[in-house]
Amino acid sequence: MFRSIFIALSESKSLRSFAERSRIGRRLSSRFVAGMTVDEALTATAAINRLGMAVSIDNLGENVTNTDEARESAALYHELLDEIAERKLNANVSMKLTHMGLDVDEKLSREITDELVAHAARRQSFVRVDMEGSPYTQKTLDVVRELHRCDGNASHVGAVIQSYLYRSEADVNALCAERIRIRLCKGAYKEPPEIAFQKKEDVNANFVKLMKILLKSGTYHGIATHDPKMIDATIAFAKAEKIASDKFEFQMLYGIRRDLQVKLVKEGWRMRVYIPFGTEWYPYLMRRLAERPANAIFILKNVLRR
Ligand SMILES: Cc1cc2nc3c(=O)[nH]c(=O)nc-3n(C[C@H](O)[C@H](O)[C@H](O)COP(=O)(O)OP(=O)(O)OC[C@H]3O[C@@H](n4cnc5c(N)ncnc54)[C@H](O)[C@@H]3O)c2cc1C
View 1 (spheres, protein in one colour):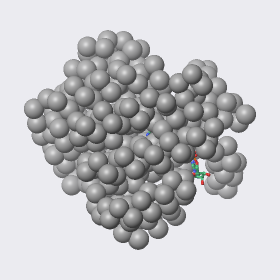
View 2 (cartoon, protein in one colour):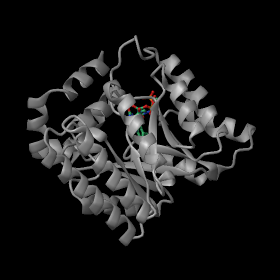
View 3 (cartoon, protein in one colour):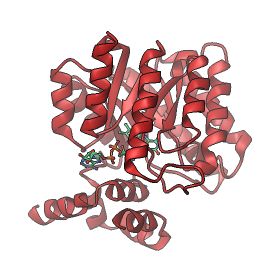
View 4 (cartoon, protein in one colour):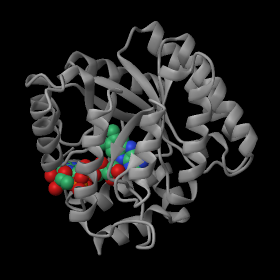
């Protein structure tokens, strides 16, 4: 029930507008969002790097409604790629196609993403194209495939697969055949039973199944989860199959299970922390609360304590 409430709240335009402008809203978000500016995101990145972890930086934003906004979003990612290189940070970027104008002008969003990946290639970096709700699944995978095929791009762009979708096994096999790097996650949107598993145990079973395909594929993939059961299953499989710890990485979100992030690094596993930043934090925070409503109490306690 709580999951549905927070997912519904994530779509409320009026609440979003109020929350993103208010000081209290910004304070509420600070546990999971690393600040509002590029500089704050880069400072957080440097701190995570010092803990022995890599980073993927995400400028929060989705579903822009005009081409100027799309171009502005892209400019900020270009700045990020340059700053990451200049400051010699161990980081890449994650972005959403609807932030680059997919809803407004599909051709433009492809051109923008193409330029970003070309820039990442020049900077020896990497662009992870996040996966959004199911209306965008096919388009997103098509874009990643197209970009991956362009000369010089192959090791600089990757996709995301959600284990709650029935189609994901076929997608994983197709992407692996093209040696496209994948981030595997459970999926953060509300999807109908016609296309997605509804029970946690089914989503988890599919996650484990897909994780095994990824680890055996020989391409460097990301296993993105905070779920100790998924992490244990991944470690057990890697050990049983003698897959070295530098052949894949775990990924977790900024501010979530920091204890587990540190523990895994100490045990010799690779960890990449996804660092979101920017003023458009509201839908992101609501999706995190949908995953774990207990975090709402935790965040409120933190704000009251300050
Ligand atoms: C690096 C990264 C990138 C992602 N990119 C995408 C994407 O592109 N598209 C997309 O749809 N989704 C994305 N997600 C979100 C993902 O799909 C899940 O919604 C999210 O990770 C929660 O699932 P979980 O695997 O952590 O386990 P869950 O089943 O949600 O939780 C299992 C256990 O994990 C722990 N846990 C989970 N969440 C929290 C929390 N907030 N606080 C404390 N403990 C927690 C708890 O112990 C919980 O019992 C991404 C997640 C990560 C980590």
